[in-house]
Length: 170
Image 1 (cartoon, rainbow, N blue to C red):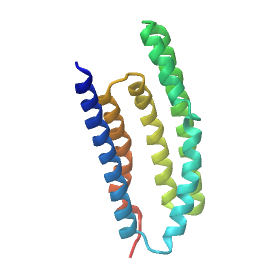
Image 2: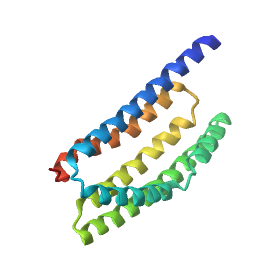
Image 3: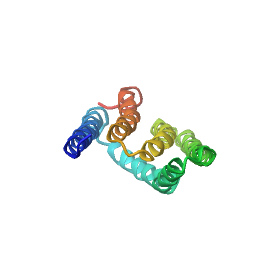
Image 4: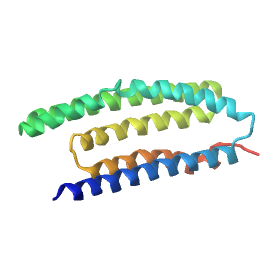
């Protein structure tokens, strides 16, 4: 494959990725403005700030390091090490995501606010998305990077699709 073809392929993949992510953000804004009452915007902002802090705790930024280690092990054709790295990382991310989800469910039960439970579920889905995301990053193909963006946007869109069920609105 020529250099220009690779560059064009990368440009198309990353442009598609950017369009998917931006479209997801625009849909989120439209649904949020449409279904939430003005009084609920403060609660949503508070939950989103706590969610952002909790999202950092899912893998503590180790996804890039794990992707590099997996890529090195694949390059050395060390399949047992690849399996161990994927297994350890998967258990760590899934365990942390589950704990955070349970904490958010506990807050939802205590406050009688389903928004916390929805965000806890979104944290768990984000944790589940991190494992394939890291595996895709350990390869250097643009199509796989675009697939990662689609996977990440899927949980956002699922949250938006359920918005009318859990948001009162006017």
